[in-house]
Image 1 (cartoon, helix red, strand yellow):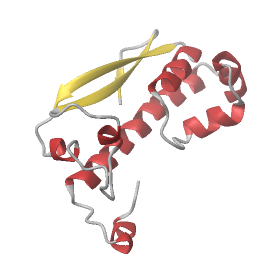
Image 2: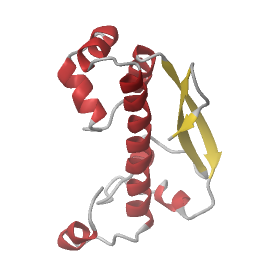
Image 3: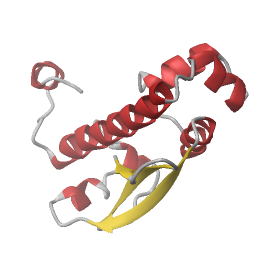
Image 4: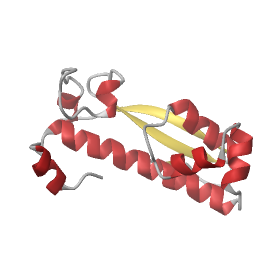
Length: 139
């Protein structure tokens, strides 16, 4: 998460709807990865084993677990399946000013991931991890 000091240093308003939406998107991704990581740990699977199941490298799994970058949904799905879970993607209405951030211009200095992928106005995507052994965990 970006500290308010960094926003000030960059001359950005941390309370701007785009900045708030970007922080929320990052927090949601981090929560999702914590859920997937916990499933992996509960199953006592190594990163190397998950990587083998995904057809990738251990370092790529490590990067993903640290939420490095902006992973594709298909990468998250492959990880989830590698640990015996699946993702459920749901769009839910949002009425908190977040919609304004979905209508940003391409030249905007702080663009939330949802806007970059063409978010549908008044909709937010919620990723949910479904573990075969427990109730769904929302991210």
